[in-house]
Length: 239
Image (cartoon, helix red, strand yellow):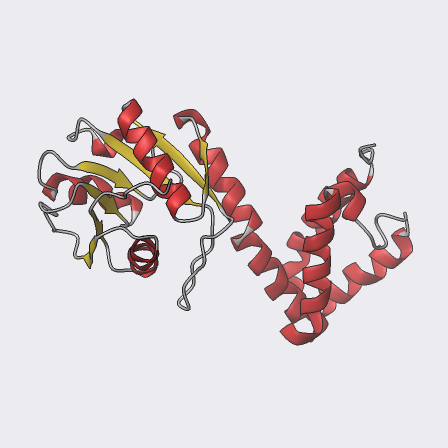
């Protein structure tokens, strides 16, 4: 049976707040917002704080007592919500651009100060089409670093590839998509191809010379990635 979702308020009208409010409405929850950071959200049962990490404590301090308050930060513990006895966090592991986002099928890191708070975070995550997983406080910085590496750093890497090769996104996109699909299906080592994987160091040297010539500021990045890829190439492919 589909659970009845609580009345929610979303504080923060940036990208995440806008997308989250729309997704909650689409899931069947009554939603107020997105609201400004000073909102008390006194008519809501559950309040989401979709604000920058440094603003969580201040936004939480304005929320009326008795609300179940949660933030949407991946790196932050529940400490900034200490003024509310029942608090939670729900961080969608999904990139959100100006065009929006679709949470369906993504993971969500959840935590709660009480069993009720944690259960509410899980219920709301599942209603949004997310798969909830619990992340311990001590692991949150590493979890968020992994998210940045998987998403933000990938974008930086493709930007670097455009610069070095003089190619546009349309030319590189099929290669990038196939590579990600192979990684998802087979894991990193099995998906690795190219000169380092086959031990062709002469070609790697030619590549490096081209980087030095065309984008010398990217040489350190190329060297670091070359070293990391050599290490990956030396690992065994899982049976």
